[in-house]
Image 1 (cartoon, rainbow, N blue to C red):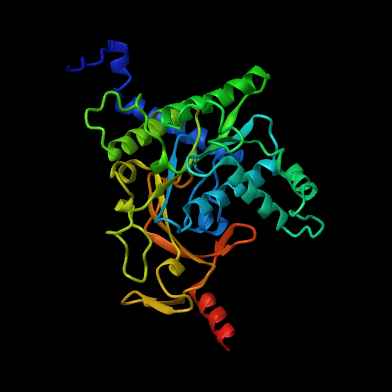
Image 2: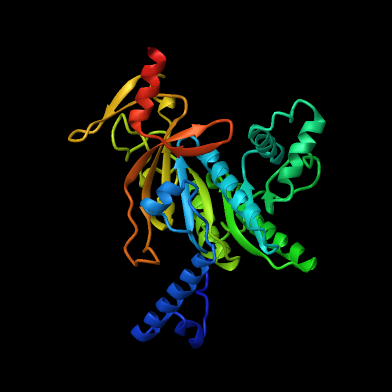
Length: 364
């Protein structure tokens, strides 16, 4: 049975049409509001400040979407956790009852995510805290509980209760339910960011796929992404950071010794790289090369670096649009050597020379 085309009236069709004057007026209004928002400290800040300032990566405003992609076990969830921690610190430093953040997990149980958070908080240097007893855990939790983060996902505690599938339609309903419950308490809500880990693992959504004849998995992921990017984020409104699985056989890396996934190495669908606003990819050399090996990349400008446990290479594959302050097009196609502090979960810039020095000192 063929579907009837949707019917729209003339006024609704007019909303698709702009004269040049209308378009310029809309653009100037958007730039003015965006600059005011950034000046007030709004926008999701990239969590490595040196990259944000020098590259640059400007504050990400609603409804922009950032994708973080990597192959399995190369740190995409870890990087999302790092970014969440960075935002949590910003929210705690400048508390505002309106501001919240939302974390969606389609893979880890809520208890697992919280356990990692407790361990990182305990590792910040308070030697009086021991996570080996419940009193220590409760003490650590008191420093975390006031941060206005909400979590959407499944838990061990509620495993025996009736729960709807964790698909995109229900994720959207859960987000708006958070806002509704806060409104019932007299609270206004500004969602500073939505973190989604990860979109490829989202459960089947029969509601979204009801109009799609071909039920292939790649079309489900495509539908999920468009619903998330084009409906949920503008309606909330909020910026988002979305983890995406990369293919296990990369087609667009820069060489056998630089295996950061390229923009079109995302698994299952090309719609996400085409329509995401920002894309960053991660590679941990220790997953593909022997520990301690010194490897080289490049021809005219050769870079030598050593494979170590803390090394992760971060690459910017895409930034759509312009810097709202300078109106210059945003750059892309650059990579950075970063160092992971496994105790705190923080990433920081780390030069290849520094990596080699560390290795040689150990060897000596």
